[in-house]
Image (tube, rainbow, N blue to C red; front, side):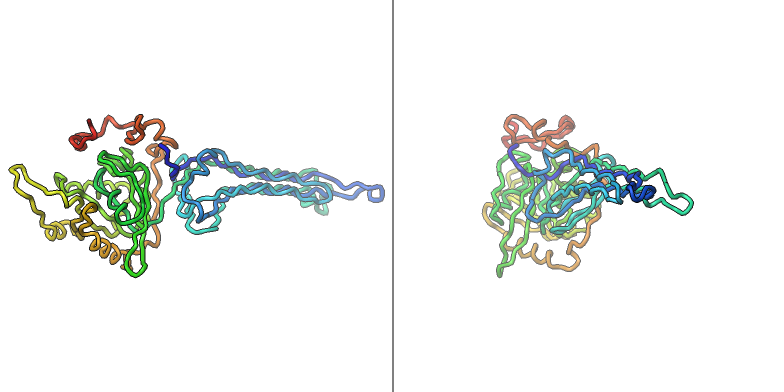
Length: 390
């Protein structure tokens, strides 16, 4: 895959150890018994995260697997302090979340530009023997060693900042809608998993107002357990204020598909269900007929009452219902209860997280369809008959 969108890296970090204190006694021809004058050791270097609004991905860290700060210098004579170790500053995009690479525990989050978080502290330098002189111990022959370094495997995940998130199965029309509402140019084709990386677009609304839409790869049943691409990119809708569900008009059961999507979101992060939701029935420009060839009509008002969310038909190709959709999204975004103030980051299942480069190991020769290590458990029958299986 040629994309440079990297939103997940795992790196090994180690801070610097503190320098040892000096064990030294002052000697001079005019002062033969000058006493202890050993200096303190220097502090080890910190590992620091810093937010940078000019970065959009974690690409710059993809091939930098080890980040090591330098150790503090040893103390010297004449109460000279050792040199502090050099801090290592890791520049990350705003919206980066940090987890423990071994346990999946949430550690911290970088939200703002130039925000600094000390990820691993360098060891303190040891005290020289000058600190241990007393009236009864005027010649201490010991000094402190420096504190050891801290080391840890770290997982960095980028959770994009957007107002509206598009949620749906593969080929639900998410990329097409994004290309019509915004200036984004996502790849569009008639097979599942055309979208392999999240896409962002800015919607121009009335009176020079705008909002941001995020399109993630299609979700399939079992995405929260690691199937397909859903688990890898579901995190990008955690920061959205509104979730826009997209289900094609020709779906076998709209209610069942909507419930499957809800279940996957709940299993990934129950907090997602507290967000405002809208349901758009896509591809309404294509006539729908039953088995006897009679046209089928859908009572959208009844469907909306049954599901408890607004439901509206749209067609990205025919530009039908798009103005109403933007009005509804703008209205929901400006409701006070839909403002995203804080999100809770649950521990991640490290054993289910994708490897750093899954696309090169599991993509087929065309580089367009992604299948992971559990592809034998997929139910691909739902995708057949649309030309992809040919």
